[in-house]
View: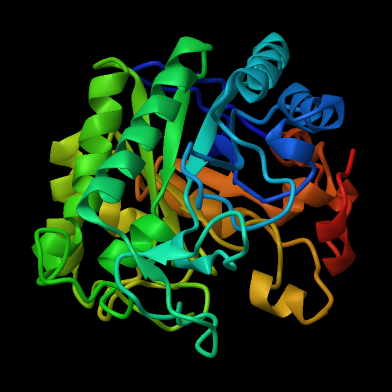
Length: 366
């Protein structure tokens, strides 16, 4: 592509320096037995960094709380063994010319309770994604503080082992989002109630991560309107409501927002074609990452039902980036299918990409 291609432009923000504007979106792989990423996981990330991904946001990594994980073989971002493995991955990604940020995650009431730990959430209600399931155990004040501390400890570990940034997973109906979502937060204390109190958990978590790292260490916050079990849910019905949220988190210490949509090209509010990332960047003044069906013709819900997928042109993405609507673009399934996707996109070779198929979710692809 030409030197004016917005995807190829370098980007820097605090501790984060990227050779281009392509981000690898976080995707749960369940390939880390015992919570420790192995050589296969290292190769998975290193190959994509070598093939010109600017920033890798890792799959969700759990913080040090007994109920944080909800899926098998999810990597942890705490403990000596797991952090030593992540340090090797960080070094490998850097050697390949890329940048890397772990996504810090607590699933909250999405977790299926078992003998080892309960399913927890802001309030004693089932997660809307599993309405026939048992209610979550409501978090006590002290346990909320413990979870905030666990996020801060993992952020400090990311800073210590040389990560370029860290992302807090505040999207898709997991724990941070459960505090934001009226359907799952029925509390009447300082952690719940009106919209300002429902975002208190997210704000305090961000402040703790900021205090545990460094002023120039880049903090990314991922959020969404849609949820697991609530694909039509909306936290914000207007730009004004969204603005209150993103500005509050910016003031707490967020440097960048990662705005999850099913389709990046869809407008977020009536009477404007701006998407969620564009509104977020305009309202907060912080750089935003857009994500959602980039490089693919079908969104993730339709691929989950087996609908055929085709590679999609990037003209609309480039147009919006050139117009200054958002700074960065995150790619998920297309990079899962073809580890060379970023290089092929930057070189104008999208006709050569391996197209995503639903069964590819089950393995690591090289």
